Amino acid sequence: MDPSGLHDSAELMRNMRALCGEERSALCDFLCGLSAIENRQLHLSLGFPNMFELCRVEFGLSEGCIYRRLQVSRKIKHYPELLTALRAGQINLTLASLLCPYLGKFAWSELLSRVAGQSKRSAQKTLRDLAALGEDSQTKVRIQYLGKEHYSYKLKIPASLHHQWERVKELLSHQVPDGDLQSILTILTQAYLNKNDLQNKPAASPDLWQHYSSPTRYIPKGLKHLLLEKAEHSCQYISPEGRRCTQKRYLDIDHIIPISAGGQTTFPNLQVLCHAHNLLKSDSIPSPSTNHNQSDFLIPERPAALHQPGRTMKLSWTKDKRPAERVR
Ligand SMILES: [Zn+2]
Image 1 (cartoon, rainbow, N blue to C red):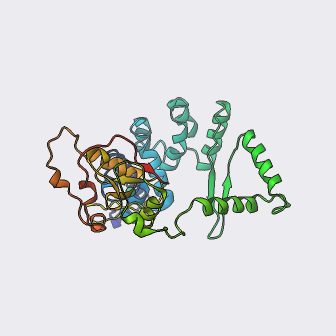
Image 2 (cartoon, rainbow, N blue to C red):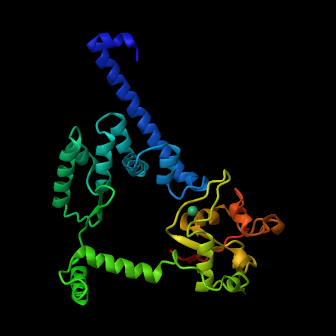
Image 3 (spheres, rainbow, N blue to C red):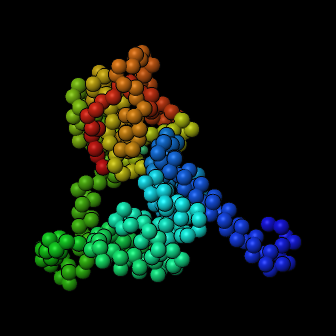
């Protein structure tokens, strides 16, 4: 901005409006870029478990900023009118984000006319009223961060679940006489983790499983446990730049050389991948008809194979259509 313009109020306002226009335009370009990155799955090959992590690490955006940008960028492909309205300044990013759940359920012209120029709170109320008219039932859980110690959860549940919950309260009436929801949730969560979470339990008989070998796809529980432990309970994908994926959800046990290509169910031939990276691997593998020399895909010594940048995706040479073993 020209500093001399600051002395003239009219000029100052003109400059500020121009800057806002440039910012809007840059935002729209940024949203298109996010959409392109996600369509190309570039975030996965760069070693990020999802777009959120890429935006946080690569672009330094805050959680709220990321949420709104991703929400809108995922809609603009099918609803380009959203981007047009943003670019024209009819709505801002907050309003665009609020509109996302209603796109396709109501006519765009009606949605735009109802929220254009409104504040966030006013637009929320307008859209809630519109949803009530259309008998739209949103059952998503609303989670609110209340500071370091607490979160607030708000959800709508069906009557059948409510009756089951009442039964749980009856069964736990000795432990929780007042039926306190938080106390019961704590008990249930702890019981579930004790039963299912392998993270804090050491794998049994590691020597046995390290030498296990089977030609079938079945992966015994003890071997899965050992693999997860060695993978530190997260995806083992490493990008060519050396970034290790941090995903701890949707984990699959993947045969590095598929059973269909002569691979075995052995400790060295198995790795933990998140579902997204497992799919990426499937997509990046040439079809069986492609003439590849199998020696190009020899498995290096474990664990080096999993910790060398860019090696993980080169280890298999044919698609195995059957789903991988899901562990989380
Ligand atoms: Zn991953």
